[in-house]
Image (cartoon, rainbow, N blue to C red; front, top):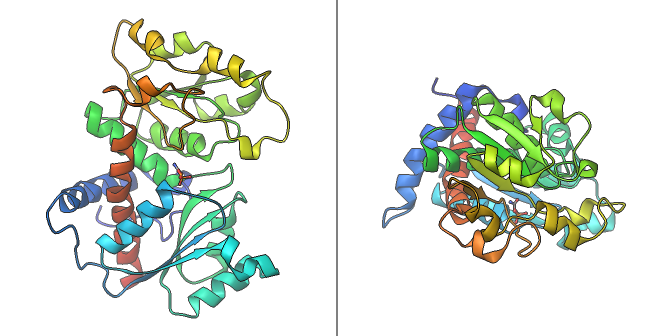
Length: 309
Ligand code: CP
C-alpha cells in the first residue's frame, strides 16, 4: 500500500493496520532525514498548514511545527487565547476565516471530544487531530508504538500496561486502539475510579495491582493525572496515589526483568514517576519526543499526497 486509507487523521479508530505500517515506513525515512546535517526536504513547498490550538501544548505544538518546517511547508500558528475566539467567534467561523487564506491542512487541538470530526465535515481542508478532549490523540499513539518498535523490534506480541488516569486520557484510548491493531497485549492499571467501565470491551485486561502489572509487562506507559479534567476527587490524596500507582527505582529494580518505561509528557515528577526512573536508561521518554517529529512528518506528508491528487 502506498497511500493512506483516510483523508484526515481524526483518530486511530479510523485507521487500518496497513496505514500504521505505511506511516512507520515513511517515518523511518524522515528519521534518517532529520539526523542529517541538512534536516530539511522540499516535499511540501506548495502546501500551507495552520496549527490551531484551543488548549495548551508544549510537545505536540512544537513537534508539528518543526515537522511542517522540515517538510518546507508554509506554516501559520493560531492560539485561541490570543484570538477573536475570546470575543465569541465560533469554531467553524474561525477555521473558515483561516481557510480563506488558502490553507490546505489544519492541525487542531481542542478540549471538546469529536471537534476534529465535526470540523472535517464542515471544511474542505485535511484535518489532523492533535488531541480532542479525553477522546483521541492519534499522533501520540503512533509515536508511542513507533518508539516501542524501535526499542523492542516489534509491537506485535508485546505486553503493554498503561498506568494511571485512563478515564480522562486521550493518550490511553488512542494507544489501546493502536496497540490492539498491531497485535500487542494490553492491560490498564490505576484506581478503579479512574478506569472506564467499558474498558474491557476494548479488548484490554484490567490489573489494579501495579507490581503485578509490571511483572506482566514488557512496556509500562505511565500517564499523569489529568487534573484539568477532574470534576470530583477520584482518590483520597496524591500521596496515596503515588504509593499505589507511582513507579520508582526500588520497585523497578525488584522486578526480575528490565521493562521499558514510557510517558507521553508532561511528567509530574514524584507523582506517577520518580526522577531517577524518568531519567534512567530504561526510560524512552525523550526518544518518544524525538520520534514525534518523524511520525508527524510522515502523517503530514502522506495526507498532503492525497490533497495533491
Ligand atoms: N504529549 C502531549 O500531548 O504533550 P503536550 O500536551 O505538551 O502537547
